[in-house]
Amino acid sequence: MYIENKLVKKYISLWLIIMFLLVAIIIIVGGLTRLTDSGLSITEWQLFSGIFPPINDDDWTKYFNLYKKIPEFEIQNYSMTLSEFKVIFWWEYIHRILGRLIGISFILPLLYFTHKVGFKNLINLYLIFLLICIQGFIGWFMVSSGLVDRVDVSHFRLSVHLLLAFVILSLILLNFLKLINVNFPNVKLNRFIPIFFLVLIFIQIGFGAFVSGMDAGKIYNSWPLMGSGYFPDDSKYANLFKLKVFSDPSLVQFIHRNLAYLIFIFYIIILFKIYSSKLLRFFSVIKLIGFFLFLQIILGILTLLSGAEIYLSSMHQISSIFLVSSSVYFLYLNSNSN
Image (cartoon, rainbow, N blue to C red; front, side, top):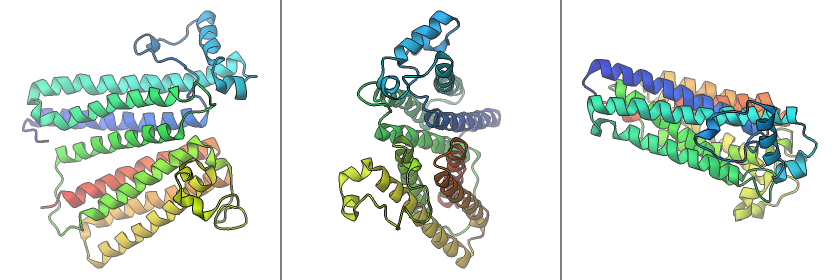
């Protein structure tokens, strides 16, 4: 993305920063919506009329009665009062409003900037907007999975929803970095190293969504062992090589733990490579990644030991935003050298 007009370039840069922050906020709010079991409180998707919240007792009764029809209420929350329902309703409502805000805040300035610099210069941003639209559909597709025959949403759909949010976040950051055009003339690493590192982190986020979606963080609340040994007591090694591994809470937690160890080992290898080759321009970013990676691991362990306490779980997710962002910056620095 090349923009000659310095003033327009400045405004686009500021706009991308705002969009990055909005996407980060919705990831945090979405995590809290999941952690508070609020995601199924609104059982309909109304793109325009859904903007307006309940304003009187009749409206609240209507929404509550709709909620009473789904399995989550009938099986799990049958004793919930209207005042308790309002709490989970507001979490989901805010989450949906943020989604609409992101869509509007992206397309309107994008159309204006297109008028200023042309479509070809901004085609990457239109692709991001397409992903935002797809994300809205996946959000409802995820919610709909919890309205019939089950008390929660599909952890597979939850994982796709979360991963796409991080893809959008990463692409916004990459386009911002390309726009401000930071160059570092120096020898670079093999281009696959930062790519593979980022892919590992995304896989870990996917399994983190599995852990959250299946409440797998509420079992085996010990570390480093899982029960009496390294491998979960209620599982078999052979099941690791079967498709049902993705629906087994114990094995999903086991994989999530070990992916963290693998990412840490790979980070140490990258760190050694950078320092031994004296690649000076990577020193700051690799130390930044190390800090957030260490923080993420510590928060992950504390979250596990607490039985997935809400605030620790949320902090664990928030730190993943910083880890992904610093890893995307690492990828950019390695690919944008002279």
